[in-house]
Amino acid sequence: MASSKKSTPKATPKPAASTSCFVVWAKRLVILAVLLATFAWLDTIKDRWYVFEPGFLHELAQSAIEASPNDTAGMITHIVTNLTETYPKNQININTKQEWVFNNAGGAMGAMYIIHASITEYLIIFGTPLGTEGHSGIHTADDYFHILVGEQWAFQPGQLEMERYTPGMVHLMPRGVAKQYKMHEGCWAMEYARGWIPLMLPFGFADTITSTLDVPTLYNTIRITGREMIKNLLIGKI
Ligand SMILES: *[C@@H]1O[C@H](CO)[C@@H](O)[C@H](O)[C@H]1NC(C)=O
Ligand SMILES: *[C@@H]1O[C@H](CO)[C@@H](O)[C@H](O)[C@H]1NC(C)=O
Image (cartoon, rainbow, N blue to C red; front, side, top):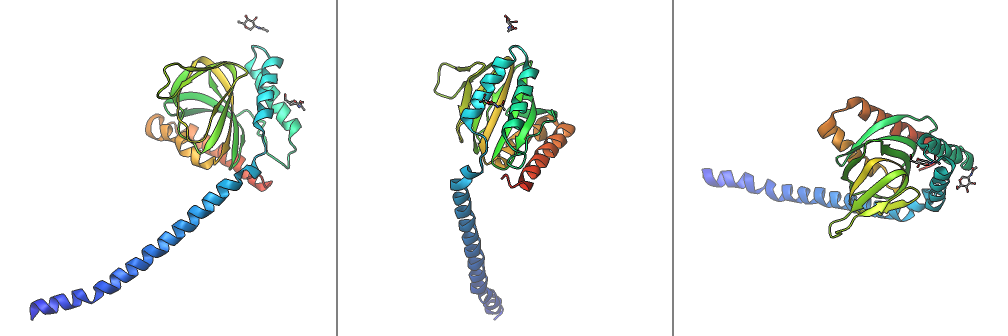
């Protein structure tokens, strides 16, 4: 009696519980499928939000080097002045304040000045007068690294010789590719990324959270990036 009593109440809720559990998981799967379909669709149309052109930026980097030989500050001014003259304020927001912050990512360290940041593009000046080396990260954006001063070296597993990028050259890292890179001695570059920028941010913050604990840098990086993204969203630049 006792055992049948025990098993009866146990047996009754079981089918109900598994049915509701099935419904819950079915709903979750449908939501997941809708989200994945939305992301896949957004990924096919992201190009319409790009404002910068890789070919134009490459020419701009080369003209900056030509206009200010041996003068990194002059190159940066040349780039920012040209961008503010080329693009109307209601199309894209350019940050003309040179707010420099450290950037630690993938074991490499340098400083950056964020010229532009939105959901689908960013443009920064990145480098260090000391040299650095690390993992490039695996990114959700194509990355165009325009060397202004110094050299960047890189390689992927399987390569026995290094790739070498010098001033005026552009190192294109397509989405999903990872490399070891080295900015041998001092090197400054104009880095342009196009793709899904918010998904790149965890890589940009990981070293700070797990290693440097440089809270002011983290705060300023988030503050400037967030501010620039919002300023762009307000003028309809995604
Ligand atoms: C900006 O730079 C590009 C590429 O070097 C050049 O073709 C263009 O004339 C420049 N624009 C201005 C306003 O300086
Ligand atoms: C730039 O610096 C290098 C090395 O210091 C020097 O050889 C070269 O003449 C300089 N170029 C200009 C245009 O000042």
